[in-house]
Length: 423
Ligand SMILES: Cc1ncc(COP(=O)(O)O)c(C=O)c1O
Image (cartoon, rainbow, N blue to C red; front, side, top):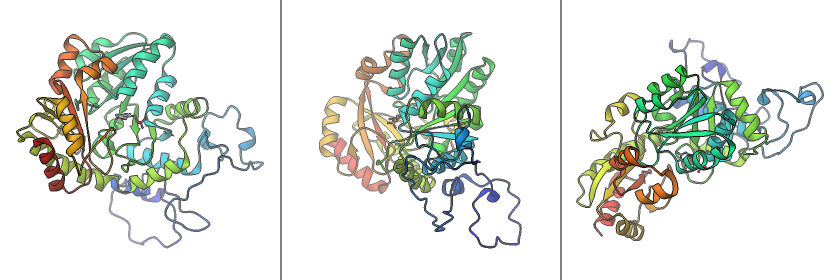
């Protein structure tokens, strides 16, 4: 059951107020981040979720566990074996489903596992995938390098141009996978427009919303069928647990669970689910603070003598700022910037940064910056040419420093970047 209303929340055993609450039907997502899927332990009345580390659970005659074979909805069964699901992981799944306004969610071991599970569930030999030509490198490489070996056709498309997406459909197109903002160049895709195209052609649409977070963008409400997150990033937010999730309609999520969990074995460990749930408790205030700091940092970088270009969806100079205002409730924590000599600056930042860290990954409580060199990204991952390469360069030049803003005081972060950039 997906928790969305006050009456869905667990009964704590005390009288509810007599007076009817205000005439609002649903809980706000700030509240769902704390209450969605929350189970008050019946034995101890503990509020913080317990960690259920057990891999298996006792089978009790009469509760359905003895006739599990052929059951489609694994979550309708009592807990049997943790590769299918686990009580702690299930709480996390219900909280994420509530946040994304989905029927259900399936948690996976990593974000890449969530993407892989989606591809391998909805694509088979002879099918066609339309893929954002710039998206998380692991997803892009998986789609372009591995899927063709299984007889799946893949067309990478610049998803900031709905007309290019429209032209890419074939009779066998089964899935459109996009990211907005996309990693690493922060280009946006008009999710409503692309969802309309996918629907018209009878294809599913999956959105990797890791950079946006559920605080900023709600892809399902814009028409997507599946929303994917690397929970490793902003949703956990503390850089100490890997995880992924796919949220969507129950029948789609169940298909993924029965493949990703049961056969691909990409299940999430209970400890990670517990850590990630604790991260979600503070997701909304974290992302609001991070977005405010990111806006200040982006404005500072725009005026810095060592910086030649800045990309942030919240800046009026972002080529899709109008779309950002329509599609994002806030502009998030990712900023990119360019400099004249990126290779030299990478070494300088790695040596001089004291508050931010020079490292891969993103979405943690501490600011992280890393150079993504355009030529290297083309060779190792995207392999774009012609207009698609030109379009990439319009956002990234010779390379972007991808800055994931954390929770430091804005002035400290800005001072740190300033001294490190000046050298
Ligand atoms: C947008 C996006 N999606 C997916 C992933 C993969 O996540 P994970 O590292 O949890 O597998 C990443 C990782 O950087 C990412 O940035």
